[in-house]
Image: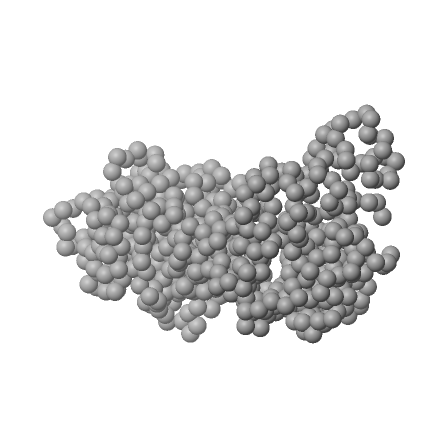
Length: 274
Length: 305
């Protein structure tokens, strides 16, 4: 699998490709060091293209074996009862690989994945499906993908949001919501997640740490402005989610995935709505 | 009527609702409307047209948003769809265009609680309207709606004492002021109260004519009458023969296509020859209208799409 442009964390300050080219074993990229600047025609739009974090090879970083096995599945498996027979929303599911694995392994009643790339997700689902009878409660017929962003055009629309899910998955997505839609957008998203959960429902949250935001700040003008204006930090998330403004009753830790790349060791939290 | 091949069932070209409104933006702006909308996962709102309250709030919102009209409907009364009402008004504008009139007087036969045709005509075109209505509660609401929108100078409601006649009561009562009107318009009660199943669709092919996507609103009184729309429009025609000089262009809508030739025949039998018909298209619904005149004016206008 071709290494994505998302390289090792911590080391690089700049998000320009010149630095990351050094880390790439790809001969094609090495050729470009001397001849062209990092802002040549083929590259300058890349930031815009991935500004929602919708990397083509996102799931490549989390593989354990050659078959798709996201390490997070092991953590989630410790709480399988949260998913069986339930209605799940997966926010920002990218190509849908993890959603499909969850739907297949944990047998929810239904799983809806919201993504900026429904086309790819649907194709992935089709490839994962070689099942004959169309039982709506059995994989893959319990999976659906919807194209769109989670943040609403205006907070007032929260007035008409309704409980409809038992579980909301928000894995490695908060950074992208935060950078694209600012503090206000992320707070609104948290409120929306709460409102969409039924009583007794759970939010499974895997937020990125703030120090990983910086290298993405140049992806677009909008992101640059939002990054500069951030006051609401990841360490504030838990308090906010448990406050009356959102209303979750409690939080517990689900565990940290032991993983090859340090950058992906993120805690997974469960917030409960009573 | 010229038909555009690309959009055979398009609305009138000047209909402000020809491009679908952005309901999500409108839901953000109007709180009462917002409350009857459903929020989808991708952040757009969806309207459930099968709910009476939703239809009521939708029409109220559109009237406010596009015409700055604040309209209230009597509970249980007919909720008009704005698109259709606009199509009718626009057709009348086209019929009158050639006459190049500075003032226009029209009659609204059966204005309902909303008085919507008269309000639109007055607000949009400054036409002076006489609104005829027989149901007491509707009269009350209609007057309040006119008052609320400051259109008392332009719209007058006349309470019909006798439901059997259309113009007689008013014309006889106002013989001193024998004003002439440029047009009359009417949304007759479509259905026949004498029929065994007044609301049953008389379609030959139910598979290709599915039930409409919305819910029916309105009281029995507003929706049905003895003999349905055919007899109602026949009464308008009969009275028009008595008052040939009082109204320049008589018009009425018809809800059922099969009734159009019946009315055309009725006009022909009475040797009324200056006649035209049109169609109103709104989404999946088509309505028809008929116009006739005793004067020598050209009713055959081609609406360009």
